[in-house]
Image (cartoon, rainbow, N blue to C red):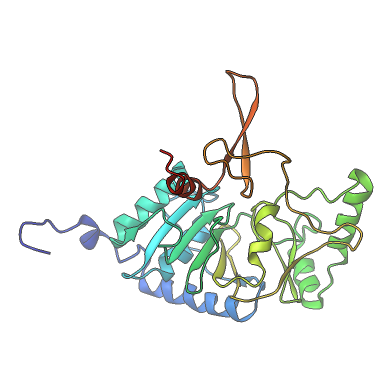
Length: 290
């Protein structure tokens, strides 16, 4: 920094990455335990953050505890780099660390996301942090915490299998659209956060590290690299991702990405667009489109 440059305000106002060093150490220790036991929910002392609970305080605490001066951060919300949630979190991290941020998935060392996993496969050395509103996969069928803890300890997931069976009896198929229950390393049942089923196969034997942070529920869990992740399913009702027959992105023409639906008021037709905005932009650049 030369004499003509002003010193950034964050250097005098906040500790690096906002959290105090004691808090960072505690979160890192709990993260190491989560990595050592795939899918196991590790309690941690969730801190008060300058964003509302439900906006990703658990994921943000993981990001702030792990980020270093040499990292490059990407923040997305349901695949978008430009949503209010993504922009606000990105700005907070920038103002309290001064590190470089990016929208390029391949260039990022640390990615914080809400409800999506990027379409571009992640490489070894990258960390993907997911914001989790409800970490306990058994909560919707068993409200008592002491019971769900015992079920995890005994690996008694019969109630979840029964819930999936009742879904088939009632609707003719498993209708779980997000937070699909999965088994990590053949042992612990975990919630992959409210990502769509489209993203579930990306968890299996992935090269990157997946971390899950739930601020309100004070839980951290992880899927380490090259871990087996199997969604619960039956032999005659296998797990399947979402399919939109004949649909393609209206911008880049992709038929192999997760698409969301847009109602075109002018034509009265339904259009589709890639949820992952950075991936869509990259495809358009490669095809010479604006």
